[in-house]
Image (cartoon, rainbow, N blue to C red; front, side):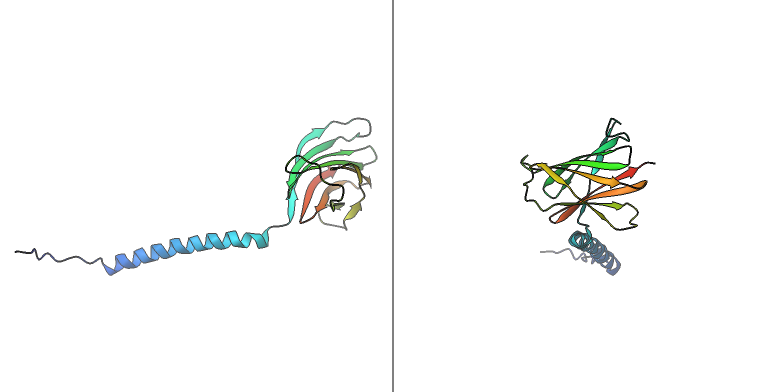
Length: 167
């Protein structure tokens, strides 16, 4: 029997090193991605923004018009209306609907506050009245001109809606 005596070529040391570096970089990026996902729980604010979805035209009692807002805070779908009268008083009507369409229970721990959007001053607690399960209304005192934020505090999360009071 004859064997061919062709030498087996070994990969060059530089090729092995570059393959190891490439695998190390890919592995490092993967670990960085995993660390970012794990770290998100420490950087996430417990705050959900509510979105303005449409205007409300001026009418008697809402001379400055208003806005319809909508969003999700934890398991609750938040549907709201904000109107402003001629004296710059702001009125809110808010509905909280659960994942199966049920209204929020009357005993749900909930508070409302108004604060300046530029974070100057202190938050003003806003009293509210339950109209029916899951539906509440609130009216502020006359507000100063500028940007304001409604803060709805629910267990484990806060929902925030920004609006402007015009002169």
